[in-house]
Length: 159
Image (cartoon, rainbow, N blue to C red; front, top):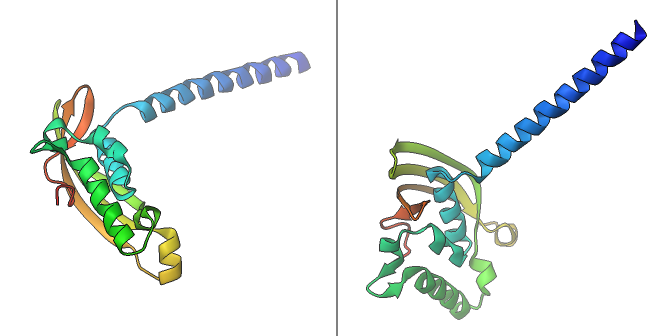
């Protein structure tokens, strides 16, 4: 009887390991799949972090306007303004908190996503007691080159 118990315990343990492995593979696949919500979040994170990787999430139509790369122009403008005010570019970077995305509409090649979050720079907020800012933006996204990309006028990127 004891041998039967050991066998069922070992079988149960093996079954749990197999199920855990299967779930892990599923979670990795889900995390690596591209969605409009993920694209909007990655773009927003890069935008407020002054990361030029935001260009990877901008559609070609919005990336180059009048022959000018708007991402490079945006990063240059913000860092130049920070330097004239006596700050390093690091000081004007912000981080996202409490990010929520809602799908307004979606089909095969187009989507509209509403993103809400709070932004702040932890170090600057600590020393200046600056409160966080609310962000509430609706993004138009398209599938371009096999990836979801943000299109249209977003934030003040072109400004």
